[in-house]
Image (cartoon, rainbow, N blue to C red; front, side):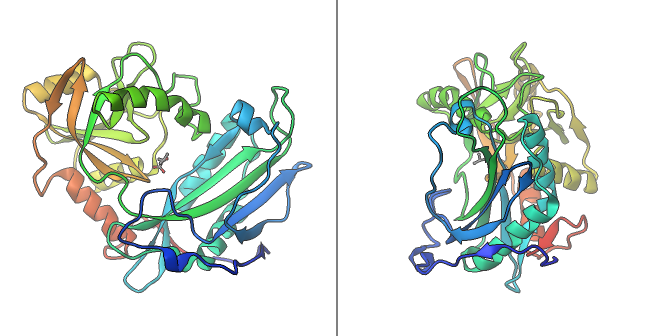
Length: 354
Ligand code: COI
């Protein structure tokens, strides 16, 4: 990685690293010592800087707060047996961030700014990348509008930031997920393919209702018929039916997940039949009934591979068979872990050294 971009760096004088207990980490609550920040105004990205993690001032009329002109990414860094830190497919995150930026009328982030900000921040907080199995450094790049103006139009100024947090497992047990037939996460032509803040805000209430009924998450279904599965919670979703790996095809309402495409690539490498297409609630329930639904699982950066144990539909629970040790979801999860921690060859060049 070239070190060409100068990033003004103010190191903390009060590191919190010693307070970190790697055995008790709750996802997203503990933040590493530093954060990266760069402002955009007058049509250009200005001087980037790395500063101690902390609160910041924004205008109360900030249009991200009022109209949701805000986007983010989720990505992870890992430490291998040699203590080397690597990022998983960071260029894919940059690409998706810029796809989201275009959808939300925001400026693109140049590759050098993104990669230098990322690598210099992680090098500075290298001690926060844990090497305990199952743990990683979760990285949250994000951009938001900063104009203090409440007219509804794209902001002229923005801030792009990155902070990181050491994380363990997102879900610690197989999930109970129910089909959602009333609310939608996104419709064709909407912003579901973008990692826009509002997609997540709007998902909270329907999710809360499902949680009140004892489920962890929802299967979001299509906006016009509520017949086809789109995503599960904040993850893409996959099913193994009769030895075939089936996942909803990408569309304007589905996020182009990086874990999703990595799992599909590994499945194809292994010669497993892969189908990216519409999959209906009816097909899933029918497969469950005739015993061909072998596995269902969510895939995402935070959760990695999250097995689904129970599928709820109109008040009835359908329990999936316990996945055997050689179940696809377990093998692919182990294969991804091995690539990320340097224990297996990185044949697709996914890992980038920090
Ligand atoms: C991720 O997997 O990185 C996500 O976007 C989920 C997050 C909202 C916790």
